[in-house]
Every structure is written in structure tokens, then in C-alpha cells.
Image (cartoon, rainbow, N blue to C red; front, side, top):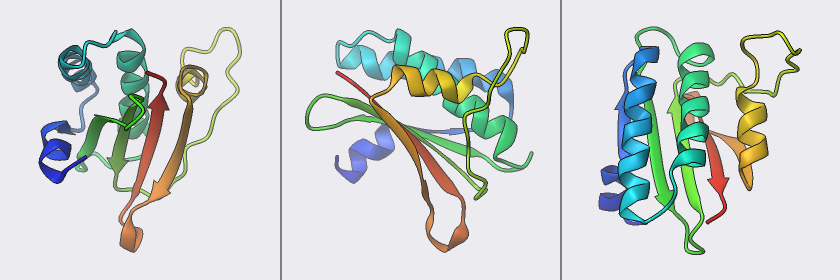
Length: 131
């Protein structure tokens, strides 16, 4: 993907959990241009962004969300934040109201992972969804 296309499919998310709905609208817009169903992409994007806002960024740090397509038609998305803290799947019991985000991401994606940003400036959590 070229740099112009990458910037076009990118949004800066302010540190406010109410903006997760804006992320879902953005995902619907982008996936709609590609003729893709948006349910799973919206679910995965919501979980990735929510995790970044809740656990991986200070109140004054913005989070960057990106979405694109791979050569095989797979959908990829990534969330960049300013901390180096690694996410992990938590065990949530049946009455917990939180702790299922990465489990959901793991179940609905081809793969997901984390890569560091140069200079210890944070990390990128990415996910790839089958076409």
C-alpha cells in the first residue's frame, strides 16, 4: 500500500472511549468501499482501540488506527499507541464485564500480534482478517 493510501485509511483517535463509535463508522466507510461485510471488522477494531485507550496510553496520548487490504484481499488493521506494555489475553469468568477483548480478536482473526515502534516510542497491535 502506498503512503497516500495508508494516510487515507488512518485516523487519530483522541483519548476518549466515546470515540470508539467513530472508529466503527470509519471502518464501515472503508470496508463499504471494498464491498466487504463490516460486522467482524467493526468488532475487532472496537476491541483493539478500546484496549489501547484503556490500558496502553496516557490520558494525553492519542492512538492511531489504520486499516487496509493485503494483496490476497485480507483486511488488516492496526492500532499504534505510545506505551511498550504488551497486551495479553486475559481469563475472564462468566460474570466479568471486561477482559474478553483480545480473546475476541484472537477468535475472529487470521492472526494478530504486536510490533515495537522504533526508539521505544510505543507499539503497534495488528490484526489480519480473512477476506
